[in-house]
Image (cartoon, rainbow, N blue to C red):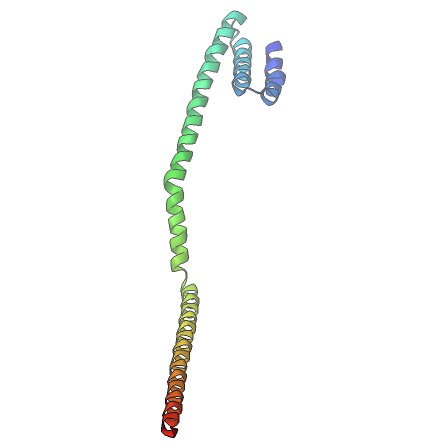
Length: 151
């Protein structure tokens, strides 16, 4: 009964207070296996201690493999599934629904029209500048011809 009390009272507090998880798991597994083997199977305490050691080593082994499996699956998730989900997510946003396509098409057309209008405005301004320069050179030529004609 003392061992059962230790396993129920002491082991959980050791788990939360101990800095080492290995120590806490060892105490927990050994105390539970000692109490089970002592109470239910009526094994003497000396043999129960060795059974507890065996039980805790088996539990360590299982825990290690479970953790290894968990981190392996986590690694595979980040390696394979997450990038494909990322690509699918962006592909969905690139294609979008028909309404989104219509809105984006209208926005694209507006941008193109604005750029064409700005381009046309620039062309128009350039043509006006050329005409002004031609007019200025024509006026200068006319002034030079008048001055030559006066002399």
